[in-house]
Image (tube, rainbow, N blue to C red):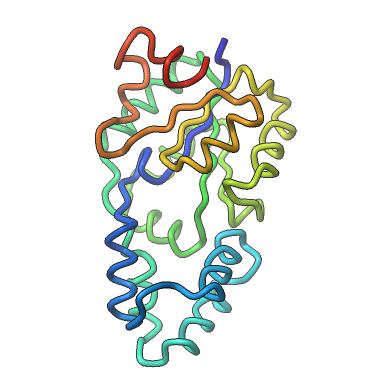
Length: 209
């Protein structure tokens, strides 16, 4: 029996354009791929291991032809709209009091600042959750097992009673190994509002419950 639902944020509630963001960044940075060093810097920032100032300073030193403001725009390019019907669904789910609701998101300070500025109902969204975990605040990130173990331990959860929803297959695979039920949502064809509607056997077939 599911008692707790753990949600990802990007491409579950807020729409992302990750592919477009990469193409846009490569165009401005005049590279074909991110180096290992850049990838590690990005991960460190997402884990809150370096400050926004240090993060931007690295990019300014590496790509001096791009201004600080343009760097922030490039970094936030992936963030798109947050459809209101998803918030409405979450608000009703919270009102039902049937499940403990947890957000578990890989994100960073610049992205959250953008969301706070451009999503007028961010605080309402946040208030729907019993616990709200952002990777840069807890210094852990998916798909590492320790972030899931942290959530389970902190909230005294039985993994068999949890449903984890994420669009990233690597994150889903880690959760499954820990005994957590999952839904690997496809943002191109599925919507979180259909959590309980798609098919009667969806919990058995797709979420390993």
